[in-house]
Structures are given as C-alpha cells and as structure tokens.
Length: 453
Image (cartoon, rainbow, N blue to C red; front, side, top):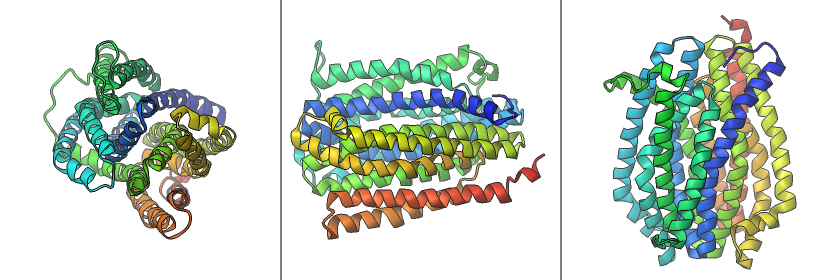
C-alpha cells in the first residue's frame, strides 16, 4: 500500500484492495451457496438439514474466526509504522492460536452437538442430516482456522488479489466434490446433504496448503520469513491478539448468531417454512458480501493510515467506504424487488417453497440499507483498534432489541415467521445508528486530524 494525497487516489487504492476481497468473499459464499442449492435439489429434507447444520456452524466459525481477524489491524499498523520485524512473529502466534481454538471447538462439539439437535423440534431425517453434515464439516476445521490467519496477513499487506486467486481456484473443486458426494457420481458414495460437508472440508485443506506455499515462495510475503524459524508460544502475543480479537469475534458472533437463533426458533414451523427462510437468508448473505468486503478493505486502509499517524486520511477512507456501501444497498434492493421470483427458483423446484421464499426476499430488501452502514463502520472501527464499545453495541442491538421484538411478533401477532425478519431488520437498524455515532465520536475525540503526528 502507498500513501495517498487526494480523494481520487484514495478511491483507486480502496477499489484495488476492495474488488479482490469482494471476489474472494463471493467465492467463499458460493461454496455455501452450492452446498445449499445442491442439497436442496437433492431433497427438501436435505436442504433443511444443511440449513440447520449451517445455522449452528456459521456463528461459531465466524465468531471465533473474528478473533483471528485481529491479525489484519495488527499487521497493517505494524507495516504502516514500518515495524516489519514484528510481523512474522505475530502471524505465527496467530497460527498457534488458530490451532488451539479449532481443537477446543472440536472437543466442545463432541459433547454439545447431540443435546442441541435433540432439543430441537425437527423431523428425524432433518436432524440426522444436520448431525452428519456437521461431523463431515469438522474435518476441515483446523485448516479453515489457519487459513483465516494467513489470509489476514496477506490482506493486511494490501495483496488481496492473492487470496482472490486462491479462492477462485478452490471454488470449482468444491463444486465438483459436491456433485460427486451429494449425488454419488463416478463411484463415489451418495451422501445427500452430508456430502456437502465433506466437500467443504476437502476444499479447506486445499486452500490452506496453497496459501502456505504462496507465503513461503512469493514476494513480498517471503521477505517476512513467516515459516523460516521456529517461535515458541507467546502468551503475551496471544493476549494482544485476544484483546483486539475477542471483542471483534463477539461482535461478529452476536450478528451471525441472531440469524442462527431465528432459524432455530423457526424449527417449530414446518419444513417448507424452514427451507424457504433459509433460501431467502442464503441469498441475503450473497448481497451481504458487498458491505462485508468494504468493511474488510476499510480495516486494512484505515489501519495503515492510523499506524502512520495520518488521521485525516483514515477519516476520509472511512466515509468513502460507507458512502459506496449505501449506494450499492439501493442497487441490491432493486434487484431483490424486481427479480425475487427468479431468485427463489434458483433454490428449489418445489412450488410451495418457491412462493414462500419469494415472500421472504421482500423483507431481505430492508436488510440492505442497515447493513450498508453498520458493516463498513465496524470495519473502520477495527482499523482504529476500537473494538470494545462496538461489541457492547452489537450485543444490545441484536439481542436486546432485535431478537425479543422478532420473537414477540412471531409468536403473539399475525406476522408469524415474518415477525422474526422484522425483528432482524430492527436490530440491524439500531446497530447502524449506534456504530455510526461511535465512529464519528472517535474521529472527533481520539483520532482528530488536529492530533496528527
């Protein structure tokens, strides 16, 4: 990355970092997308089972991987401050922490998965698909957590095209293994939705090995000598990572887990409703990749500028990113409004699921504007390493405002399942207001351009 001197240069650098991140995120999303759609075309029970399994796994992974995303602002600020000798040590400690966290999750899952699934009001076939899907996915847990650290290191250097290429390479591999293992083609076992779990696990191993090879062999990564010497575990460095990462992880967890909680609460509805809800939510997640990618790009550029003491540039980057996200939200909302029936047809051939999915997609339109504000703002705040207040704001917005309101509307009004979506929209809107106010505050009080070095 380079210092910029005007808005045009900032936009160019922001887009140079953003576009590869967006392609990467879309590619990773499409792994889940193909898991869902290919399982859905196998049977509604497999679609519902994969939906429930994903709803349990996604908040766990995104929350814990959010802790590891602390590597991005740590490295970007080190590079911005020209303290490069600390980078490799920080990355390796992140890898150690990733392995430890994956082991803890694997161990915890062995004890709590069955009680959770057995406590849900699911059809027996759906419950079994969810259980076996998660078991299959667990084989890829260790490489996925390690890959998160390595990707954070690469992205922090502004070389986001590298992770884009890795993920684009892995996507067709994931689709091929889905085809082979879901439908039992070319002598492979026919596993239904469970096959999607094994396909994803195989893909996670592949992208991790490719990324390690790139870091060892290619510049500028090889100049940091990340894997060239042995570092003992440093609890003090773990503490630094956790101090930044835990609030980030909890913030992400509170956001993703509320969607998972809604899906779990909706298990009292029939399989058609669960499948329709998950299909609409899955496409909403596709559109969410735009503000999420802007958020990740802002963490990099804001962290770089803050590390160099250029607070005015950090502030300008922040609001450029948010403005672009809002524009894109209106575009995505228009797509949902005009093509919701066509979109629903991607997920299912069942006429009942198709009709209900199209209805849910109308509510997904209103997610877009709130996400366009709160998600990029979170990314900018991470660049400032301002994460503690953010975590409290997300907790209140999602779990004290959004979920209780959704539960009330779904269970005590005529809104039924749609009530949960209204609750989600309300929580996201509250979060957007709170986080936007926080970013404005720290830019005025803590990182005011007048305080520049």
